[in-house]
Length: 191
Image 1 (cartoon, rainbow, N blue to C red):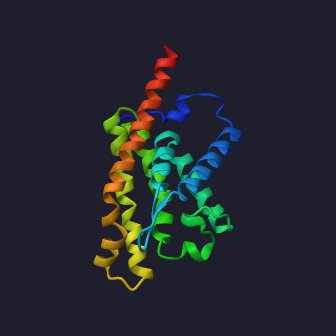
Image 2: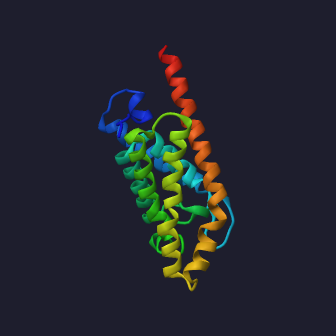
């Protein structure tokens, strides 16, 4: 499989610790802000978090994207109101959305991994790199929901996955369009 460079690496600049820390901070703040854009649904709100996570994975690469989402979770665990609806704390993390929160790290990492393995350029490839991990996010999300609520597995899937499939498809397409456009802009500036 082809190894390719994530957009933020291709953009260049110093690959210093300071740059990486800045990217992690920016990315974790972006995810926290996107969590506040919410469509109320029971038991899991639909937010723009997965769009932000896809963008981070598509542009940062696996390791830096995973670290960014770990930083986001650490911020929430420390009491910063970064989760949906301004929620925070360990109690919230162990509630119905806990599987999704933990799955965010895997989603970001896997998106970046797919980019690094050849799905980092071209609209179709970028879409696949965003959509596959977004779809797999529902595995830990639904299993956790099933475990911590009185819902059976089918009801957990109906509540925590089915209503969000169209949104996941659209958010993956939007992320792919944004990053594809960023690549095109970068290439045109290089001449």
